[in-house]
Length: 427
Image 1: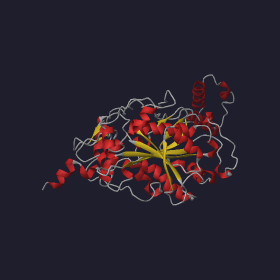
Image 2 (image 1 turned 135 degrees about the horizontal axis):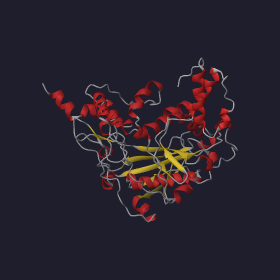
Image 3 (image 1 turned 90 degrees about the vertical axis):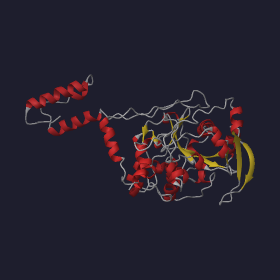
Image 4 (image 1 turned 180 degrees about the vertical axis):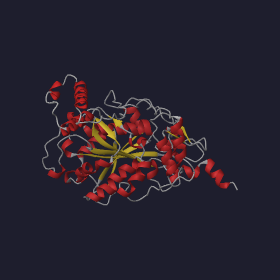
C-alpha cells in the first residue's frame, strides 16, 4: 500500500484500513489522527506487516506413547510438481552441468564452501530426527557452534571424555564438521560411488525448553554456563562399522544399475553391522534423566530400525553416571582397556540384538528392510522415492533437491547415468 501524505483522501483511506485490521484492539488506533506524520504512518505500516509472518513447514513430530519409543509412521513426500517446474528441473539436470566435490578432509563449514554445501546438504538430510517424551534429537545446524563449544571447552565435561582440551577452532573444524558430515552419507567415504551412512549424530534439544530445569552453575565456568534450555544441549551419536571379514559397508550402499533398497536385518547380520554410542550433555542438565531418554531412544533406533547386531558404549572408568546408564539399559561389561591416546581406562559394555529384543519383550520385526529409498539422503523413514532419473530407470530420489545433489557431485549420478554413458560411447 502506497502512502500519499499530500492528499487527505488517501490518508483517510489508510486510517480506515488500519482500523479494520486492528479489530478489537482499538487502543492502538486511539493515537492516530489526521495530523499523523508520514514517518509515523510508515512505522504503523511496518508494524502491521510484522503481524503476518511467512508460514514455515513444520517437521512432523512423533512423540512415543511410552518411555521406550517405537518406529514412527512413514513420512509422506511432497506433492507432485507442475509441468513448468518439471521443465525447469530437467534444464538443470542436463549432461554437462557443473559438478563439485565433497572434500574428504577439511571443514564443510568454511564460508567459501557454503554455497556448495547448500547443494549437497538437502532438507531431507537435515530433517532426520528422533523423539522422546522431553527431547528432540536432531541433526546439527550451522548456528550450533557456540553451544557445542560451551560444552566441549568445559573442564567438568572434559574429565569424562577422551578428546582432551580442544581449542575453539578445533571444535568447529573437527567436531561440528564431523556432525554435519554424518548427515550427508556421501561425505564420509573415499569411494564416493559406494558410500553408505557411517554414523548418526544427533543434537540433544528440548521439546519444551520451559519444562527443563537449569541447575545452578556451581563450578561450571561462567563463560560456559547456560540460562535456558533453548537450542543445542548436548549430543548423542551412533557410529556404524562392519565386522565380517567377508563383507564391508559397500555391500550396504547404493550401486550403479540397481534401485537402492534399505538393507534388511539379514544383510546387516551378514556384514556384521555393529553400533558404538557416544554422548555428552551440558553439566547444568545432569541428574534429570535427559541423557537416559536419549540413550534409550538411540539404542532402540540402532536395533529396531538400523538393524545392528550389537551396540557398545565405552565410558571411562571415572564416569560412573555413564556406566550406570549402560547397565540400566542392559549393556553388559565385557572388558576394561586403555585404547586411547590420553591414557584413560575405559569400561566396554555391549548388548546384542537378540538380548535387546528379549529384554524389552518385542518381536524382531524388520519394518524398513527391503524398502526403496532415496539414493542420496538414504532417509528410509520417508515414503518410497517418486523422482526418477529420465536417463535410466534405477536412480530414484525423494526430492528434486536430492536428485540435483547426486547429479552435481563429482563421481555422482551424472557420470554413472545409463543415458550419459551410452551417449559418450556413441560415435
